[in-house]
Image (cartoon, rainbow, N blue to C red; front, side):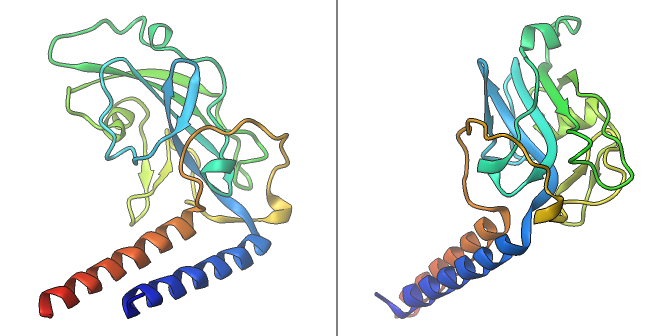
Length: 211
């Protein structure tokens, strides 16, 4: 094993230890999760809404809830199909239609002092190359983002906060539900591991060029 790989392994191990300690203190994060729908199944999206470019006829969802990671995240509620959501939005040349399911969560998930709006569906008509974020901006303003481009609010909800940690005694209790496919790493841990492995690859490639 090279010194770079050893360093990467040690850093990853350190991150795992830190993440385990953090889990003892924090039950999760309060944030909007992003979902793709195929048939009657929701799947946790593997790209962010700014990167995802859905086809005409796609159904995508957003759910506000307290979640530890994607394997713990709550799916949008209710039945959703493109035909019913976009029934009153006819096809138009040079555009595409994207059905959006917006689930603002439960009172237990809401930040202190806020009440979630009722879930709703909207049909966004956008340009053929538009991203999901652009479709969302077309149909569910106002949106709010933080300085790192994390989606904080849809249709103005919540009015404050963005991905904040929630202590174990604050997390809503729920019955176990079947898990959808998707990344299973916690959000901070996943980002940390990607950064470590990316840095290791960079230094290894640099050593080879200088050899």
